[in-house]
Amino acid sequence: RVVQTGMRPAVRESVPFWIVRLAVVVLALASTTAGYLHFVNQRRTLIGQRGAELESILHLKSRQIEQWREERLSDARFLSESRELGDLVERHRAAPTAAATEAIDRFTAPMRASHEYVRMTFFDLGGRSYLVFGGEGEPALQHDAATILSMTRRDEPSFGNLHRESGS
Image 1 (tube, one colour):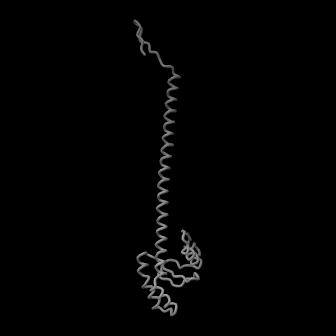
Image 2 (cartoon, rainbow, N blue to C red; image 1 turned 180 degrees about the vertical axis):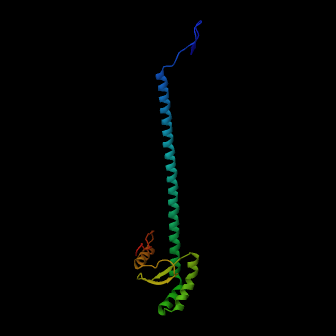
Image 3 (spheres, rainbow, N blue to C red; image 1 turned 120 degrees about the horizontal axis):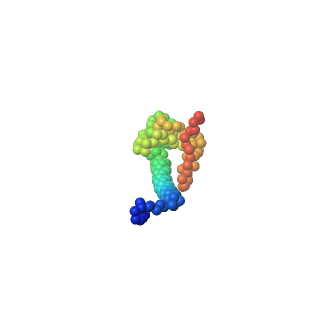
């Protein structure tokens, strides 16, 4: 504020220095508090979004696994209920010739190709590997056969590791 009195020069009344300091401190605290609150809000929002994304991925993957299992069980049911395949397997058991094996291979080839099966292994009821078609991939081990048989006899989902561990 400027005060003009007679012939004297203008005298300026100054704001006390402590008020200026206080104003700067209050503005700094307000700015810091607002920034922190914005950060906390953004963090909470991002965590919520990521959680929702992960939950939806979880549901999608669960459905994919269920669908995959149902497709495999459907293939197994089809093969086990197939009269033609049963006749071919019985013929092979009676006389395990290359021609009998080739007939089973021809019968199962379309399914292996359409489902991109690397290997198809047939087990006897004792859990022993009986016939194997497809040369790629790892052969089934005896503990795999028992795991597979127990898994296919259940109504609820089952998980088993059928991959060989390194070094075995």
